[in-house]
Length: 258
Image (cartoon, rainbow, N blue to C red; front, side, top):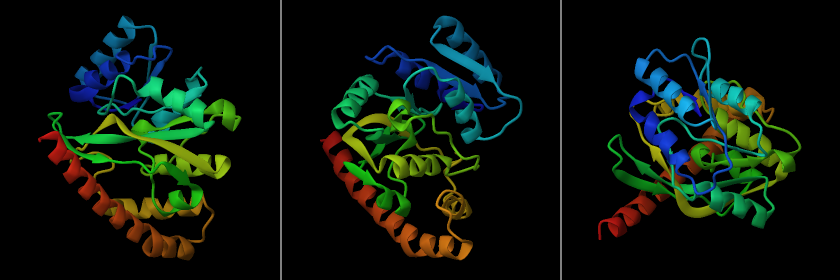
């Protein structure tokens, strides 16, 4: 878990991990230079409350990818999972997903997830494909970072996020699926993703150069090929995905509210 001035939502995120039915976990939090006293005090209080919660305070603000990598480096367990400091897991997430990984003999899995606003009101759903191939992932990220778990034992080592300011999670999953060839998903939602107006991923236009950078650095594309892939394949896939999410969310909210 990376944190940066996340005090308003941080307790909910940590509490959702404390509430897991699967209890053999460690929560590795790397604070990315927070200046908010509430964030710092909350982190200190939780680390004193439960020995499984291990916090380091980094110097300066390096970005979520760097902070996540510091936690991956310190991880002692076989499985690496991600939860940002404003997101939440459902209580059965780890238990169900680790059992699913064993059943599928899979090195990378994810789940569907619910979207919510700052007041925890549900706003929609993102349904993950049951199978995610490397070719699918090249077109657009299909793995919600807050739901992803990868198996270091099956992969043979830990995988780290490239030090890009944005899209580093997609780059990580591309590297993993390139190795293991297929990721699998539980289509039931097992997490809550908070949609915030000023989050790192909220400005979609600014993500263009980072998408292109992923194609260049992870897939080794030339710049012209990276831009051609982005405009010719990524954007059509992305907009189709957005339309599907709107339809899925509309049906989900209609069912939710009767």
